[in-house]
View 1: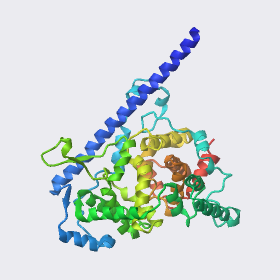
View 2: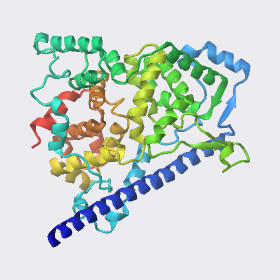
View 3: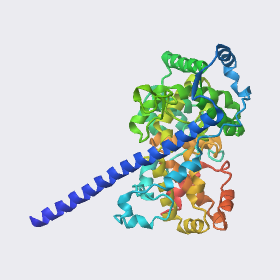
View 4: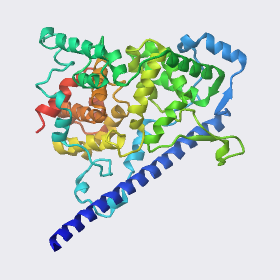
Amino acid sequence: MLQEESDLSLIIAHIVQKLKSSNLYAQLERQAWGSWEKRILKSLNSMCSELSIPLARKRPVGEQKELLSKWNEMGTDEPDLSLFRPVYAPKDFLEVLINLRNPNYENGDSLSFRTHLGLIQVPLKVKDIPELKEFFVELSLNTGQLGIDDSTQVPPELFENEHVRIGQKVLAEEDSAAAQQYVRQGSPTALRAELWALILNISSQPEDALYYEQLKTNVIQHDLLVDSLIYKDVKLTASNDDYYFVFEDYLYQVLLCFSRDTSVLGHFAYNSASPPKSYIRGKLGLEEYAVFYPPNGVIPFHGFSMYVAPLCFLYHEPFKLYQMFREMYVRFFFRLHSISSHPSGIVSLCLLFETLLQTYLPQLFYHLREIGAQPLRISFKWMVRAFSGYLATDQLLLLWDRILGYNSLEILAVLAAAVFAFRAVNLMEVTSLAAAEAVLADLSTLKVMPLLQIFLFATVT
């Protein structure tokens, strides 16, 4: 009886400790995000003051007519954006994540985590290779994959033809769960747009097109400071990309409408962040005079437009493109620039990446660490943009197939580790961060699926 009571006490103590840790981490999330949020808003307000421009204004009628007339040719407009700067870049956000600490573990409650020598010092639970193998079982070597088994060396009758036939059947039956399972092996190019829409339950009804037109009207009528940030970001990223520059007009249309869409605020219900607020002049701190700014609650950062760019290959009607991007954002992409303990959150992805490298490529990890080239400083920009702008578009879409198929962003961390494994021989010879970055500067020739398969199921035990 005494032994049972003792065991029970240990169990209760363990549960209490877990809850204590969980509550502390939740508090840590809120504090860290609150501090980061203040920094972003300070940057935004400073820009307003320096440039003597308001956060929002109603456009004069003449300006409204001009914008409406060139709505489909906004890429030809060359406003002077030289004085505008991105509110923040991924490297700024990484510094915030590096400084996260859980006070429970500072006091020695987790000796095992102290062996983690990466930049992320928050001891979250992440999957190890056996757990990843089980989770991504459909990526195993004995399962057919688009991105491998549809290559020119493999006759289409061995896999590709049957896979396409099954995909057509899934679409005909309008089965969202079956579509999600199906794209774990990759989606045929001709079926991808419909399959993704089915998985995300996007039906594109007339009222959806009307809603998009209302957002467009709002853009025409009101000018926001974030509009210039969006223009600047598109000019700095997608407009200079060999794959995406042709979609410049679409990117402006979608992102400007997105900034006005208050339905996006719904994702804050399951996000540690809170939407930023603006107050009527002279009413600072009075909630009845507060409005969310921008209306969708999302301040774009450097590279934000690259979440939209790859979708332009799939959807050629702006309102359908808009629907797909909005749904991808509120389901997945927001987690890449939010502080949380979610398995698909950027903190967990960073920790998963570092843990995989330290555990399965220890020599490489220690070498890079010793020369001041912590691997996360190189891979963070890939993960925070879901590899958009780094991989060739066909390879990126195969990767995003699996994000939708597994309803998880964890594959981003696995691919980042796989890239380091693939370039390990060259990386072992570098002697500086700049040299390591040079080795990994161009990912456009990489084949995603072989890399993932080899890393998960062939070389790592």
